[in-house]
Image (cartoon, rainbow, N blue to C red; front, side, top):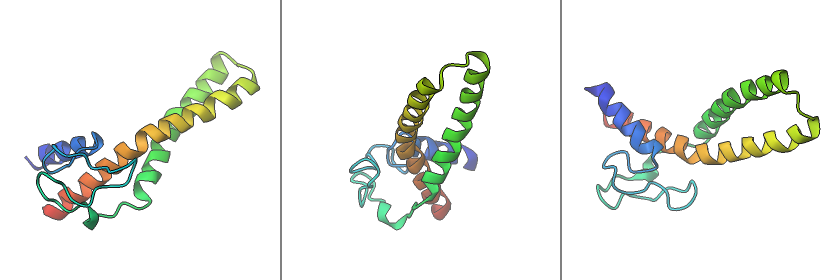
Length: 116
């Protein structure tokens, strides 16, 4: 039961919704959280994420991109100039897409642990 609840909390956070009720968005802006949930009243400002989500985002992006870069180089060996354009762009897009999702899951985990 507890594992099921934790997964539900993390999924809601990853979807950038309130982990408690799932009805209200977490963010006011890109990664700036609302102070409180308008539906259930949970106070988001009590939970600090700071560098944790950025660390996990870098970790995940690195584990996705490094194998892709190595496999591309081994199998296709594209020119370096093309790689110097493509890989930073892919890194930037993937990082910007994942960061708010990871931060939402991080916030959800903190709420779940504190409430238990």
